[in-house]
Length: 275
Ligand SMILES: C[S@@+](CC[C@H](N)C(=O)[O-])C[C@H]1O[C@@H](n2cnc3c(N)ncnc32)[C@H](O)[C@@H]1O
Image (cartoon, rainbow, N blue to C red):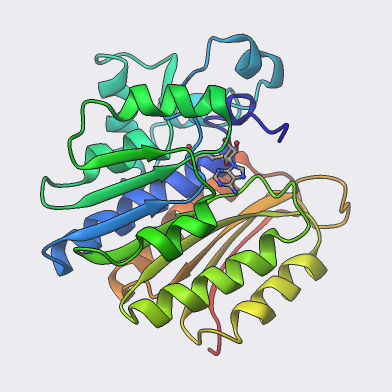
């Protein structure tokens, strides 16, 4: 496993993923007395954007720092901006929360949170990040397996799946995990992040997903036309079982990222399977 999220933390894709994640958690909290959250690919917990990896990629400059300095960002980004400022004690950086700190900060005492990370170095950082939260557990296990062994205990399941897509079977495993999670609890909600490189790969994934659910909300940030499959041309969030109430927030986040951070020929597409 070569992937280190520290190179990409705070980029446009994190903005989309994290803004939608927080909007979804807020809505689910109003509907469910307790949530059982699994973060299958948790990463390090939080990131220092002044560190060598983040500076070398420069991705945060074109992401979170643009958001922090903008005056026209829609309300959907407010919880993410607040979380970044809280982590930096009121300032605009250089610390950026990963999904574990965002989830732990949003959950209630009655919720449960399992965060999975396989890399030893990032797992150690994750374990330390989550130590203050009694309801949270960091595990050095395969996140897909954890959905089967730890899922659905003591609350409505919410599963965030955010792999590095280094393995050829990631898409197939996501479809299988979705099938199993919905079988364990049909009220389960899943949020899957994927890169957008070329349309064929993405379409094949959605067709696979349609074999296990007819309820997916898809938000595509196409930063530029999807013409070069060797490049990450955008990102998508695929939400299974998401409440209708979250749809306008998903749309607002996706539109703003394309408008403000996209290039010529970019496009925002938010749509439901079967619609
Ligand atoms: C994209 S990063 C996660 C970022 C994080 N979700 C966030 O939003 O801050 C993916 C992480 O998954 C880890 N990983 C890769 N395969 C895994 C697996 N099968 N189970 C658990 N973690 C895995 C990688 O080491 C990497 O740290």
